[in-house]
Image (cartoon, rainbow, N blue to C red; front, side, top):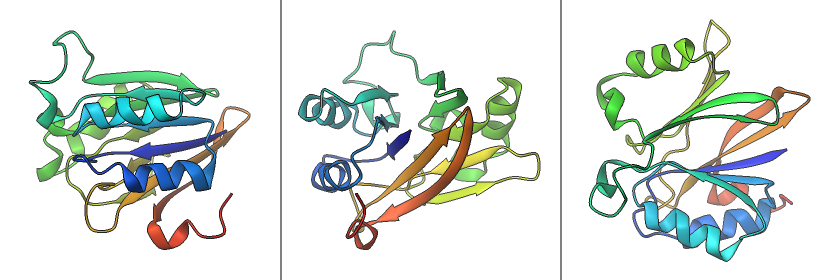
Length: 165
């Protein structure tokens, strides 16, 4: 399964649309800031499975009942999804990673910092911040899963989209 991960779109839909067109994902995830961008993307590609959580800039535009943290099993892999502001990720990820471990997740997805990163820590937990798809030329995350495992995870930039498909 191919999973595209976006965060911090801030009204920048064009990079997200180019990613979807180039990657042809099975699933898309939007991690907030701006929630309505995720909804618009899903409207453009309704055939693609979709999850999203709101960010700190979305408090006035989403219902309070919408979960800000989503734990979801996708293709046999447990994902912990959040924007990151509730875990204080601008000052470090220790609280976020601890919450993902307590939830027995194999991968944690977050945004908020606008700094893309993707790695597997010493405990085996995958950590991804796709960066911002709305600024600086855009970045996104691409995760591939098979048989209940993460087979690859990486950050994509505009220059990576040529030749992918």
